[in-house]
Every structure is written in C-alpha cells, then in structure tokens.
Image (tube, rainbow, N blue to C red; front, side, top):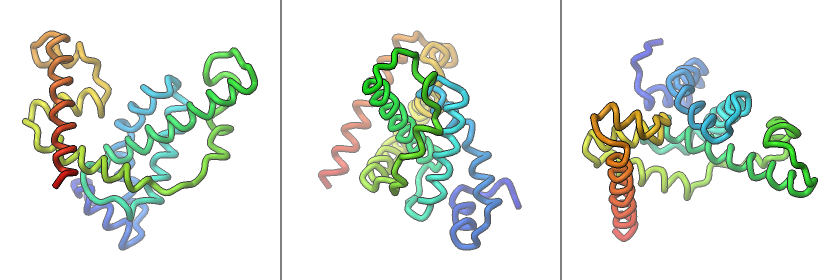
Length: 192
C-alpha cells in the first residue's frame, strides 16, 4: 500500500474495502500528535497511551461519521474528550472516597474506562470541530502554523517565539487575536 495516500483515500479504503492496513496507516500518521495531546492532559505516559488507544478505537467505530477536515485534529478532540471524562470520573471517585493520593495512584485508567458509556461521537462537537477547522484553514499560513504548533503539537509558546524570532508575549498576543478572529468567523458562519 502506498504511504502517500491522503487521509480521505485511506478512510475510503477502510469504509468501502474494510482494509485494516489503511486504518493502521492513519494511526501511524497521527499517533504522535494524539499521544502528545493526551500526555499534556493526563500528565502520565501510560494513561496518555491508553487514552490514545481508546481515541483511535472510538474514531474507528465512528469513522463513517467523519465529514472531512483534519483527521488528526478529529482524533485529538476525541482523545481530549475521553481524557477529560476519565479525569472527571477519577476526581469524583477521589471526592467520594476522601482519597488524598495524587491523581493516578489509586485508580488505574483501566478501572475508569470500564464503565464509560460507549457513546457515539457527539454530532454537535463534530459540527463545531468542522467549523473550527474551516476557520483555521482561512487564516494566513503563519497563523495556521502557530495554531498547529501550539494546539496540535503542544509546542511551548517560548519555542514558537524562538522559531519565529519574536518574543513570547508577542506570540501570546497573536494567539489571543487569532482565537478572537476564529470565534467571530465561527459565530458569523452560524448566522448564515
């Protein structure tokens, strides 16, 4: 199989031909991105690996609901939702039991995921993600790169500033302005 196939072509092969190798290629293409986002959220390598695996399983189950856009971002959003649900569930259990140990020491991620509902991917969140991806695609290339580095790859602001020859404060201001423009673009799109 050619490694140069687009995400759309690979997804078509999974859906039409039930080709598991095509989905493996998607996983290889985006696993680092999804794992990095999960690690930032979970602060534990094993938990991040579990969240990453769960996200790709969920994405595979819901693949027919993917409506285009950035596949890696879609799986990353799924991973974030899974991670947040797991952290919230752990927080509630710690509160009920009065546990004082740090997160992750008394409950494993496997314990938390056992009673998670196997719900489908939220259609409203999918629509929001699609709107966000379209708005990001309309940004100038350098602003798209800043968004990719910071939100998709987890590059710290200081490193972004160094890459662009700017100050960290300048990047903070740019990110704030970019987010405001994205918000307006998305809200404007809803009014149409």
